Image (cartoon, rainbow, N blue to C red; front, side, top):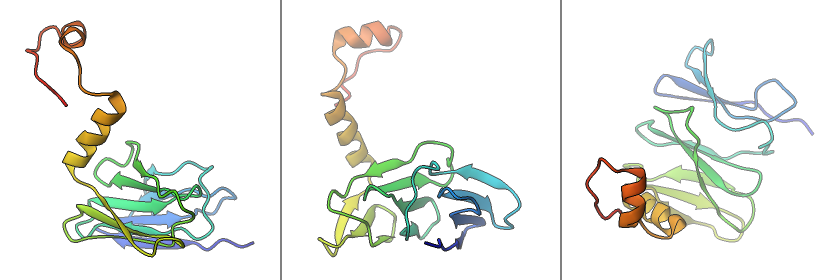
Length: 153
């Protein structure tokens, strides 16, 4: 099966999926295509027909993954690991950002449209839930002895 090469231009950056190699990967290039900025998705994340979207201001890039999840990167920090949003119900057909980039719309075969909040408050809530709550006073003293204690979650 032949894979298509897709190029998107946004705010002086170009995204190619996949590059001319047998592996699929998402690569961020400068607009001239001469300088590779970062490889955003590893070579094992092949997707036959990826869904890709930039936020309106170009600060975020979202791409579907083979496992049906969506990964979101900050374009100002492309070498940092993107946040993964699981969809849980099959391949992603389309994605798009709401104005202001605080919400990502995701379409899958089973749910025509859903939205995921991309706010700092949601991110903090996810971190606290995964960590089982904030640091205790004892943990704070152990890891941050020179910083006054404050409740984090």
